[in-house]
Length: 461
Image 1 (cartoon, rainbow, N blue to C red):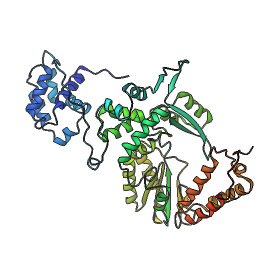
Image 2: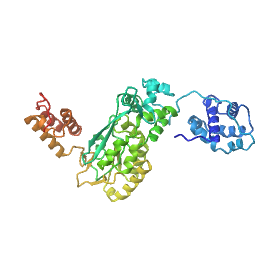
Image 3: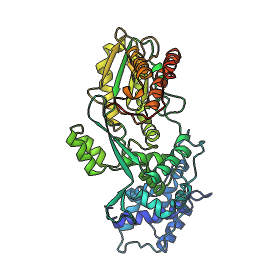
């Protein structure tokens, strides 16, 4: 529910609209020009407008370029010069609303030269997404659930479908998968907007040119490798942070809110209840899902998560420098590596990482902390990094045995996990090992090519 504005807030907002109308024109922020637009809004001049306009005219041009309506209205509301408007018998009245044309806001230094789509209004956002205005409103509604016009049952039609998948170490993983219309819009946002924005150099997950291999390679041959995991990485990123990211990229308030609504989701209560019944979801996890968050399963979520974690990466990279270590992140996997002295500093490093993560809105998983000295097998996202980045020998041997039995007895005999496309699954496992060791990939592909894939594909009973 939107809070009702007080009269002082409403007056400050009306003045802010007028002052922003020509603020980017030559001389538009001079005290005289500001006073004239304020007087036009009030239907006449007033003595208190002169000191107010002079105080606002002293603001720097960079401040004016970055000012939006809420920020300027709040600044006016808090100014002592504005108090004089309410110290007279007759309160000022707004006689005219002066609006400026909608336009993109300037982006921070370093992001200003990237070619992002110019979308100053909701109408232009709908056109860019190839949607009509009503369809955009339907997809970006705060409730994110509408009664479908062709649904005779009258039940709300969600924009997402849910999948629960078993985790390797127990529990269920929730996938929130957007339906066709929303997914098409999200894909456009990803391909034509988010992919043009660089992420921090420490981020290796979901970044073109970087991978599990590059993430692991940064930590090969180190005396100590230390790993941390973030709990509920995607769901910990709220819609407010996504909205702030789009605002930073220069999109006006309304467009930024619509983009954030397109890319975030509030999980259905029945799904949350199912996860809690399973025992794999605590109270805080349920609270995260109940609020608008980045859904795991949306094409936009990985790119947005990396952008929203930029400050986290920046601070953790600085922390690594202090400890004489190297830092990289692959999605929720944080890894530090360095000299033998880092092992003695483990508790201090852990405390700092925990504090920085909490300050940035994340939480470390207490049971997923690893300190791996060189005499133990050091793994980074499943990759062994003691001497060079390589897949664990046991993973290679296990996959080789599966391929061998598939060649002898047919693939159906080995599809015990009932993969819908077992052939693609095996090729994916071979590719994962192959990106780290081409010789092993060659050996595995020879076995794969011996498998007979003709005939119906049946899973074992």
